[in-house]
Amino acid sequence: MNIQKKYKKISTKLKEFQNFLSLKRKTIVWGIIAVPLTSAGAGMTIYIDNTSNIAQTPIFAQEAVIDLDESVDVEFAVPIQNTEHYEASVVVYPQTNMTFIWNEKQTLLTIIPKTTWNPQTEYSIAFPHNSYEATVEQSTIFSFETVAYPTAIDTSLSESNNRYVDEGDDIVIVFDNDIADFDVHAVTRPILKTEQVYDEQTRTLRVQIKERAQNYKGFHSLTLFAKHKKQQKAQFYPIYSLTFNTLLPKPDNWPKIHVDRLNIAKLSTAPSITDGKYIDVNLDAQITTLFENGEFIANFVSSAGAIDTPTPTGEFEIYNKHPYALSNMFQVYLPYWMAFTADGKYGFHDLVVWPEGHEDMPSGGKESERSIGSAVSPGCVRHDADNSQFIYNWTDVGTQVVIY
Image (cartoon, rainbow, N blue to C red; front, side, top):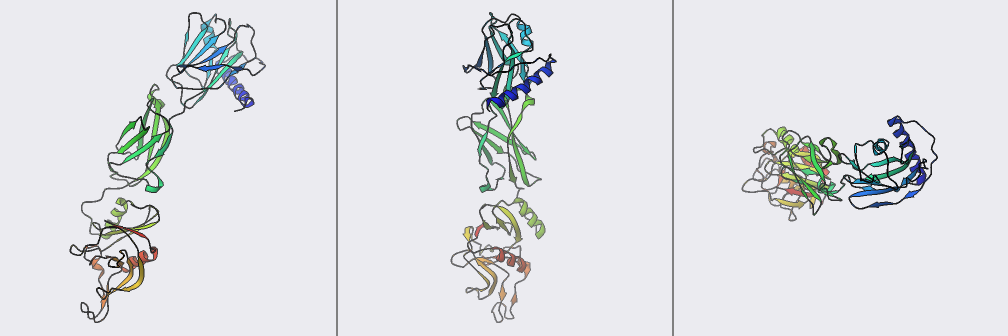
């Protein structure tokens, strides 16, 4: 801030001071003089040359940054004769309750806030110059800033993990400086039970989610509130916030009604891949879910491998596609075929179509949709015609697949 702007800003503050104290307005000729300012860790010190009894041109102390519980020491060239009268004309902006302590010679005044200075605040203290009778002419203005609230510089939640949090997960927040002098509390909305632990060495706060969201799936907010340990409880201030997703718990037994199963799966399935498209297959629920960049696209009831012919689990990808493939192993047609193993043995497809003359179905025909939702296939993952077409058109060769 250049000196002209500083002059204008302090001039405005002085008018507010005078209005606040109902002081008589007088014309003051302003000037600028740099005043030495020192710090000894326990307090900031300013020197006032009050040897003259005539109101001097106001001077401005250099700016400084002090801690929230730090004192301000004012040294006077000659003793202040009427300290009580003098204190009444010392004005701080923003208004703060202060304690004044004088030395025996009445040449050193220590100013201490009754609680603390507010964090991240610019203060100005105006002192009358006259050493015998405090007057409205404020001749020395001491400006300083207080240390900022703790600043979060990193978090374990990011776009890459799509911010999904479950019971037992930690949300890790890293600060730029040690926060040991502050009380910091994490609050979630909607409310979840949490537990937090701070590590001074790494300046990290771990907020652990201790319970699942039982009735609400979706975005939650986490806000950190902080106050200096010497401040009152009402002085908590929000310093950081983030959002995250929560999921409802998966059921022990999935409902037979497809629409109910799909709704529960949508509310309880988190993407394990958040970069690009991927197909998620839950064998327990017989549900296939499509995600793109971590966002839910659609889900479908499927029919995967039977107990004796299970669908392989793990991470795969789509190797090839064909709208109406012929199975060499079973000599049946597999509409909307997409192989997810390199050998082409397993894939996604529509319900099986038997050609006429097939030994299992001499008259030919298509498999019944009654099999959808049950684990009865030889190992592939099947869907009905409409859903198979949707998945086929949406999926590219190379799309990742996760089956569990």
